[in-house]
Length: 619
Image (cartoon, rainbow, N blue to C red; front, side, top):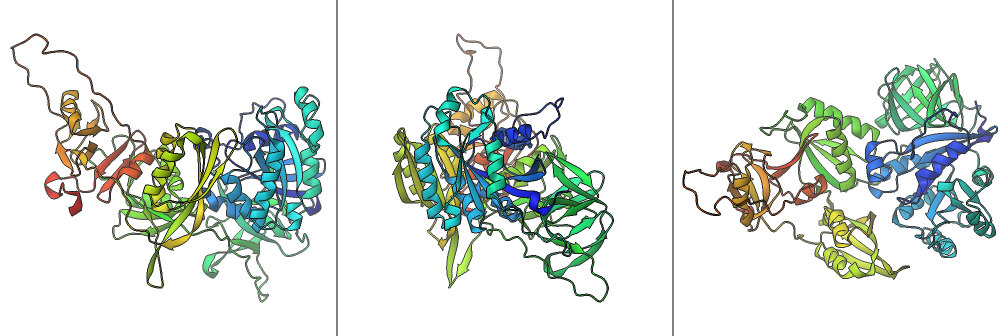
């Protein structure tokens, strides 16, 4: 058991691909967190499949390293603003932070978002300039740009006087001395380690302010689940200590309380949770024994009868949700063919489980017992939830994303985001046109290094729906795109959405190539031959502004008359394969996106062709 004065709790802040997870890998290896015979995967902190595929951190995770008698708890934080709920609840668990910055790119938008939260908490920051081995590294510029960022975010004198570590995470070395960098680069880091970083953490980050002799109190900041002991509450012990088997009191939202016995206690050792008999003030601990624990709850020792109950700690606050989406039971004719067709009760339970573990998500009931509205911080956050559910084998439907509006002094207000774009200079004109058509206002134009520029726009949240894929197409995949919540502003009027109607299948069965060839001149197809379709399923985009019911199963009538060249080989010119994000942006109010483990389909809410209009202005 570690004493409070020997504990350090730190978070790691970094933009995507600046080497955060690689640095944690080497911190764990050099601190002896792994046994010599263990097979160690790369990027051990990005444990989820979606995190590894997308190269982003979605869920905040905890680990720890031991340096002599000292224990350093390390918390990995997401950088994307859509997962800001993860950031905001984690910052209360730490006393300092490592700001990891690329030696060539400097501080980028995701760095700014999380750093602003850390500075607001009064945390002491250590600057780690990573990838000093890059040929285009410009260390002096990055240090100056980071200092300017600190000033912009209102850092105080103590925070602005930060220590600087120069590192090459992929080679596992660092140094606090700028003059040593050329020598270490030439020697490829031979003989150097990450020990200077450990020493700086122990020197700069204060031990947690915790009273080991007071009455036990812990704020639940994260949740986990064990097959053996059930729900686990994770948080930093603010005072006192607790032993296994003691009677505790959970102080929930709205003044609700519940007593329970502690069935198990754990602390973090490396990447593993190690069962202990006692956890003490200052450490990050894990408590089992109550199935109703939620993020933001305070857990204390059950007071003796007649003694006053201490006030709970302030609950974790997050920025309000800005976007909503309706989740529905799958009612298509193909329901149950590719996954588990969940009933409304099971869909509700799954969404409730998600909202309990993610304070940035909320769920509301709708007029239909089969549909539930989920409110979140952004389109990416909801798209990640949808992708996770389909990988769990569920089938369901989702509606068009809607922004969360407010009324102030009789005026409709809508949420706006600040979009920070980094791209080659050649694409500025196209990108500016794209954002201005979505009501974006250009705030800043700044030339960067090597022919790149940085643009900042303020744009309504509804204008950002589907923008990410369009932006990457315009910049040929070379642009960086990040957003953060700005504020609520007056409604800016209607946005140009989809101008074209839909090509809608009029019968059930598998699509036939001959029929699709006849439909190519009517618009752009989303499906190829041999794909199951049904009445009301959208199989393409019409070139006109109305919907068109079409037969995707029409077969060629064969006769015994042949002519020269009549049977030449014909193939479809091309398909537009719609991803989940593209489908969410494309659909209109009268359409659903049907999600299964194998497919993403677009369909009309009313399937029968004789019950819906093909004129889009009548919907």
